[in-house]
Image 1 (spheres, one colour):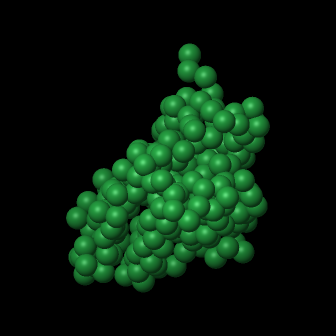
Image 2 (cartoon, helix red, strand yellow):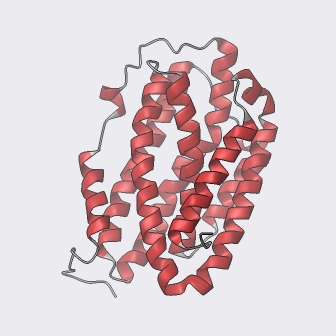
Length: 252
């Protein structure tokens, strides 16, 4: 039940992340030098624009998802989670706005959705989820993908608008992952038998779709020199570590 005057000290870790979220707000218009050269030729810029497309759509899907699940936390009286998710919604909106500006700065376009059915299927899998914990687990997987991809951009394009933007987004993504792991760990303690099979199904579905997306973008991956085996290996290793911390899979 919604609480008029909730105790915000019931979850100090979430409140700490909430306070970090407030302190970590930044404005794309002022912290990024949008006039700096991109460091990419035309072919590379178009390839980067296509590879960013799933992450770009993911920021929009995350905004929608926060709006969908936040009322569930409200109705269950989980006030610290409500507060944190509110900062997360602003983060996702900022990422979307910044990536929109990056596309215009580079003068390239994302892949149209009708030409990229795997991307639509991937994000539809998230949008169809109704349970807040299952949705949060799907977002965690997306954030792990984003962390790996933004990390590559930040390292490869350091000093350029895309690299600087990726470095700022990475800080937000790290905070979101910490919230997801903490909150999901509490959910598994309460309803592990019910949630674990659904989360593992979500994991398998999203990883399979993710790999199919990158097969479709094989030429762009090769243009930018990304090793897909190493890329997905890192994602799967990171997710496995987090699954153990959450309690979805048992540590050896």
